[in-house]
Amino acid sequence: MKNISRREAIGAGLAAGAGLLAFTGTSQGQTESLPRAFAGKHQPKPLPFDATKLNGISEKLIRSHHENNYTGAVKALNVVEQRLIALSKEKDLPVYLYGDLKRQELIRTGSVVLHEHYFANLGGNGRADGKTRKLIEQWFDSYENWEAEFKRTGNALSGGSGWTILGFNQHTGELHNYWAADHSTNAPFSVPLLVLDMYEHAYQMDYGAAAAKYVDAFMLNVNWDEVNRRVENLRV
Image (cartoon, rainbow, N blue to C red; front, side, top):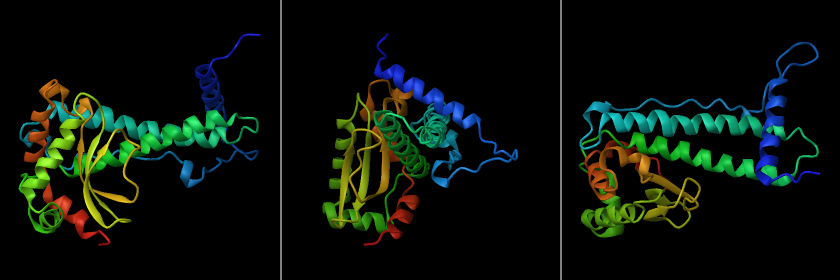
């Protein structure tokens, strides 16, 4: 008997799930509705700013980032959700196959949420003011201290992948610049206020390996009105 690798087993499970998805009719020819948690109907949000007017970030880069990486994550999340409900109907499904798909659900969800925050906090003039600046000064003593640490955290991720997130932790009641290695390693109970994408796809087209120049350009385009809106919604 041929030994089946883990990858082959996962592929077979997904193929079986696809077959179950295709069979959605009832005996009366009606369409079976999916539970909302597995509907897979997420839609990408359009860019909330004019991509031709960013300072130091090209329209070509931002559109590629939005159309390929972000929209791709949305589509992948939809597929994962629908595969989950399909595979759950298999009584003899190995749990490790389901676990692998649940991990993908976590990763794709994180990618969608963080990308949407990232694009929403771009398109501004980069001048911090309002409630966010006051909150930053309370926790970092000065805006300059915070900015230096935020940039340092972002640059620490250069050449790899991840996110830098100014987040307010609802559990500890503290404001921090968080380092996130990927889409699924955010600090628990933290609310993202400012999100910087440090995956290479966010800057390579414009800056190559010079990630620090991208970080500087990002700061020139922060939409602090959007960040202030997020701060106003905090439970401080």
